Image 1 (cartoon, rainbow, N blue to C red):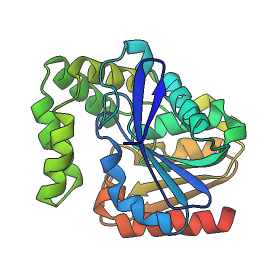
Image 2: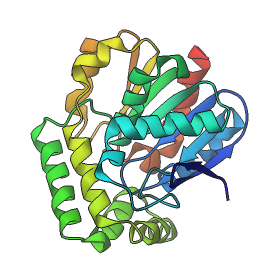
Image 3: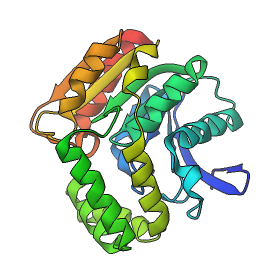
Length: 257
């Protein structure tokens, strides 16, 4: 299996295709299975899927400091270094977008472009705050079975896909998951967005009540930005409307790279 060893941790990744590197960053605990429908982009690019700590096949038990957003961005940087990849387009979904944003801000020389799907630079709106508080509460109660039921069901129609992701979520460490939610809730990048010097693509579902309020933040602060709204879907653009999601990414990549 393809792993990168970083200190005591083992980071699992999958890589397909060739060409412009395109790295996908998932939300807490969901793992790279989140992007299984994006594997078809390997027809055009070198697509890289990484399991963050406490997700999928990567190391589960880490300290609270190791799941802070800047540390996770550093982890991705170290993985790319081990893989001899000089620079890449970084694509983050939901809270994975915070890690992708931090990567672009911290490692601009290694960032060719930034794609955010349902992204937000801070957790400040009423609904998103409630969503994070619920996640923190459920993790504190060690309700991994609830996560294993709710997250896959919200993202996949296929029972097979739901079962596969649920199986990996049940193996996670509840305390680490709590730390990840708390780290995501604390993260704020809004005032630094103006520092982004690469092309940025943001994709939102038209029915997404959690993330769409943050569109204005990006439009106000980012110089080179494209905003695309996908109809007939809420937050789960990569899994519920994968064809549209992939087409949007591909068309944007062709224009810029």
